[in-house]
Image 1: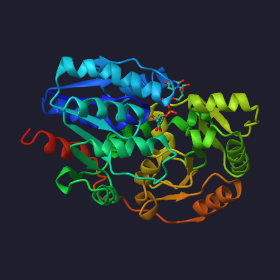
Image 2: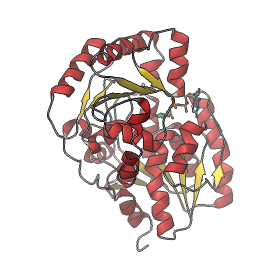
Image 3: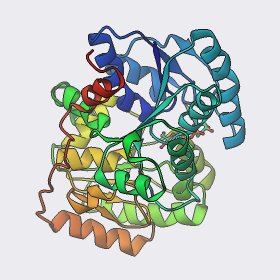
Length: 355
Ligand code: UD1
C-alpha cells in the first residue's frame, strides 16, 4: 500500500491524476490531506471538480507560522504512517506539507517519492525553495517535470538512478478537464469577452506582504486595466493585505478564489495572465496563453525558453514593458516534452511496475 499526500491548493491538481491512475489500476493506496488549506474555496471545490475521493486521513493542521505548520503536519502524519505502514509516501510540489511529510517518512525509513522534483529558483528567501531542496535530498524517487530538474539534481549529487523525467502531472489534470472548463464559459458571469481580458493572481509573501511592493504591483495593474479589463481572484493572504493597506483596487475586478474549472476556463480564454504563481506559468505555457510573471526569478525556466512566459519582476515600469511586449508578441510557444497528459501513468509504471 502506498500513501499519496496533498495539503495545499497547488497539490490537488498535481496529485489527482495519480489518485485516479492508482484507482484505475486497482493499486492499494491511501490519500492523506494535511489540511494546510482548509477553506471550501481553497480545498473542497478542488476535490469535487477533480473527481478526487474524500481523503482517507485528514490531519486538519490549518494555518500557522512555517515552523508551527510544518511541525503540526509532522506530529499528525507520524502516527498515520505508523498505523497504515505505507511502503512508499508520494509527495508533490514544494509546500510546507510536502517537506513535513517527506521528513516524517524518511525518518521512519519509508521510501519517499517526490513529484515535481528538481525545480530551483536559486532564491533561498522563498520558503518553497527550502522545501524543494530538502525534500529532494531525502527522497528515494525523484520525478522531474522538465529537463532542468534532472540537471539540478545531478549537480547536487543525487544519484542518476533515482531521477526519472516523467513530464508534468499538473498538465494531466489540465488536459483531462479543459473541455469541461470551457463548456462552463466562466467569463460570461463576470461580464467578460473571450480573449478580451487579463487574469491576475498574486499570493506570495514576497509580492503581497511588503506594502511598497504591493503598491508597485497595484499601480502597474491599474494602469494595465485601462487597456485591458482585469479580473483578479484573490487568495486569502492577499485579501488580508489589501484590506489592511487601504489601497484603491477599484479599476480591477476582485473576486473570491475560484474553483479549478472556472479558473481553467478563464485562463484558457484570457488575452494575458499576470501572476506570481509557479503552476500558472506552466498552465499558460500548456495553453499557449501569454504570461507575465510578477517575480524576479522562476524555478520553471522552460516556460520562458519554449513557452509563453516572461519574467517582469515587481517594479511598475518593468511590468508595463513586459505586458506591452506580451500583448504585441506573436510567439506561439511550444509544448515542453512530456507535457502530454500521461505523466501520472509514467510515474505509476515506475512505482508499481507491471500494474
Ligand atoms: C501555500 C504554499 C505556496 C503555494 C500556495 C498556494 C507554503 C510555504 N506555501 O502558500 O507555495 O503557492 O500555498 O495557495 O506551503 N488561508 C486561509 N484559508 C486557507 C488557507 C490559507 O484563509 O484555506 C490564509 C491564512 O490566513 C494563512 C494564509 O492564508 O495564514 C497563508 O496560508 P499558508 O498555507 O500558510 O500559505 P499560502 O500563502 O497559501
